[in-house]
Amino acid sequence: MDGLELSPGTGAELPIGFGVSDDAMLQSAAGSYRNEYGAGRHLDARKARLASGYDVPGMNRAATICHWGRSGSLLLSSYLDHHPHIVMLPYAASESIYNFFEEYESLSVWEKLVAYPTYSASKKGADGDLFLKNNPVGDFAIEAVDYYGAVHAFFEAYGDAPSSWLVTRSTFFRLLHAVYGVASGRTLATARPLMVHAQHYMDERLAARLVEDFPDARFIHTIRDPITSIDSWFDRRLEMEMYGCGNRLETKAQYLDMAVATMIDLLAWDAGHRHMESRTRAVRFEDMHTEPEAMMRKLADWLGIPFLPCMLESTWNGTPYVVRIRGVPSCGPNPANAKRRSRNLNVADRLLIYALMHANFAAWKYPSPAAMERGWLRVCVIAVTCLLPMKMEMLTARLVVAKQALPALRNGRIAFFLGAPLFLLVRRLRMMWVVVTAARRRLSGGNTLLKVLMVDCVAKRS
Image 1: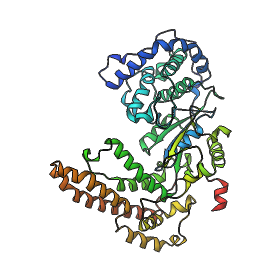
Image 2: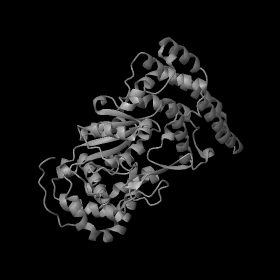
Image 3: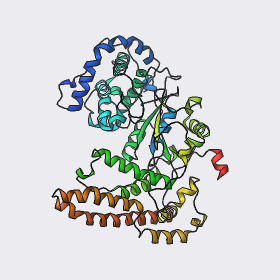
Image 4: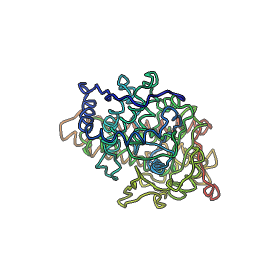
């Protein structure tokens, strides 16, 4: 909203009225705010100076990052973390913005800004807490007192702005990013930074919201070698199942379904969002590890920001982003992590993936058997291998029987136990249907794949 007339300050108390709400999340947010409010007031002047460097109404440039399985979306975000032309929330903390806005639309924008960190944490656990101090992969948090101080600084600047502007979804999106930038103490090189948002999971509805709010929004997808991506995403699906039940699979009310879910996810997410092709590009996981500078130069050019050396540093709020890969600490590029892996796939599974996703291997420059260039051979391979249970299905079946069905029998849950054979049969048929349906679409050329920002060295090697 260019040209918005703003007063130099409201001189009023921040209007927070949800402390008496019956909503547990809002009660928690109100408690956090009350505990930090007194300590935060003396920070307002300093935060106000930083806030004055933002032209919030003019912040109209946005990009979002989505992943294709376990393909380095967090690593890519960490490369963008400290760029002086970018403002972003760390880790997955911005993932819940649109859902929160719709769920709590009746709150004022200032109430939304105070409540959002608590909401994000409630949805994402450790990964979503803006003020986290016990993150298992490192301490990337800001202090709550700094965050609330930044909210007050922007209230002083924009509290008297027209209500028609303050109530909009895009204004909340802008202010949340600006507040976090000020709370982290950063001085940016531009008053209108690029806002980088974490959509992560493919969601057509969320993509449409972003474009409605920011018509020039861009979508960055991270991708990976299809063999490795399917293998790794199966592991991740199991991790999420285990986390959701506290590592006690016998307590789950439904049987595990990781294998079919893995294939459904990755066969659907490689085409990007509908009607967003011109504003969408993908970057390869392997390039982030083996050719990070060439890849980040390409990305910076596409995003319209200068390439800077900080784009080669993996950080959150300037703190190194350290992860453990097979028990070994790692930060930033790690060429060893770019190697193909397939421990959850056997030979027949790999042949199926080569045939089914032949276009992915070709378009994204990943090695695959030259024989798969023959269409008739791909049809034959799919027709035979889709009849065979994948190794992922067998691993899932073992867990269903050993960790769910048999414990249910021992605990007297006879109906649940007797449902296991039918469940596994239905999932086997479902997997066949998923493969055949995807094959029909892909063999007919009806699948539009993500377009990759291919670095020159990769193109030459291919």
